[in-house]
Length: 150
Image (cartoon, rainbow, N blue to C red; front, side, top):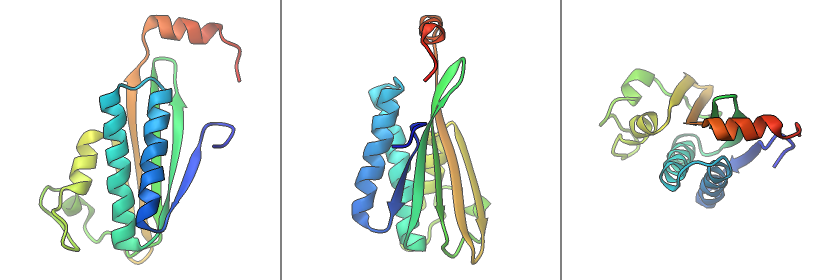
């Protein structure tokens, strides 16, 4: 993990999905997310990692904490240099699938996460940005304000 808490996981085979999920769950837990939300974040990461493998063969996922005054978040940026998505709006509809999938991955991730954006260019690859947030209560914010900056 880097100084700012960011971590990058190369996605090149099925075995890489497990550490990507684990890092996401760990970061969410460190930031005080509930067990349920930590699991949802890990599930979203898993779906995106599997899409990278299925459609591009390899790519990377970057995870980073986001600390704001009133909220904390897990930010996930995934990228690949694969064939790209020809019709992003269609890919975000339930039931639209390719490569023998059920067509639930991207729409499901979109529902799970608070922020979800796809940028894709045919023949050049795809980038997914997503984030999950939780509110900080007054006591937590007060304690954080008293701690020295890292």
